[in-house]
Image (tube, rainbow over all chains, first blue to last red):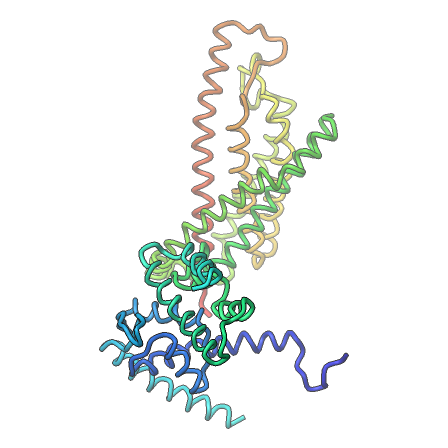
Length: 120
Length: 322
């Protein structure tokens, strides 16, 4: 069976997928930090991100949370909720300052790229 | 927790750092438990094995998941990798050339063909592995110190690539190298027939050990290649890369030869028909013992030369202005 005429070839699709993941990677850090302005544990954080259009798999999210915590951007604690122990994450004071800076940077990049793409 | 989930978490834990293992596994277990409970509430029944599989598959392979918790590690980073790859190809190519030449020498010398085939067949498991290991080790050590090396090279800007070499100074150095290499080659070509050029008057009772017959042809070939590369750069100064490759080849050969000679039983022996008196035996033994010390110094010098050439190549390549 031949693919529809406007379907990109497999190599192009693979290339797009790589570039998409690369593009998404930096954004994901900012999204997680932004979402953690309010306290969450892993499961609710993932749901909140997915509801806002940014689904992320567990194998990416949990290691990322640990990395951000080891960098001092997040603080966490084990607490009981609904009779179960859960690890809650929130932005640390340093995390709040960094998010503000990253937010401005993100908006600047977004606006610039928007202008560049509109010019084409 | 079902046995399947327990087994999955156990496998993740196996690859996690011990200090954080319990904490990480506890958090993952909690997420899995919540997902399973949510799904069971949705369906109004317990999950089947296949449905549990689907939940776990979202987390990924246990090893891959655990690896993501650790720092990004590499033996040779992307900055150094292109130079490492080039050096590895040159070193393995050079070693293979020596091996082929040795196999040919066995055939020409009248050895059974099985020995020549054995020489070639053993290459990947002996010399090949050794060359691969050493080159990788050297580059891994360089990679560990790369930021410091770069800073040092950049501080005095010695790492910058010079424009195409021109001028009399460079030309005369090349000519001197060609003259020196040619003199050595002529001397080398005579030693097989005239031991006197090696031993002087002692040639009456001394001769080169059989190991020299095996390495004679490879040395001759590689030395000729080096000489040709010198001529090439003299005629075409923009072919400096040819000289770089030629130099790596001779440095690599020097290292391999030092190892081969160190592994040999002896480097000199009695000339045929000489009566082996106690005094002469002591002399031959002494010369072989001294030769081992010299060979060891030669080996270390060759290793240093390769390290230095690699360092120059790395710092020059990595700080090349765009």
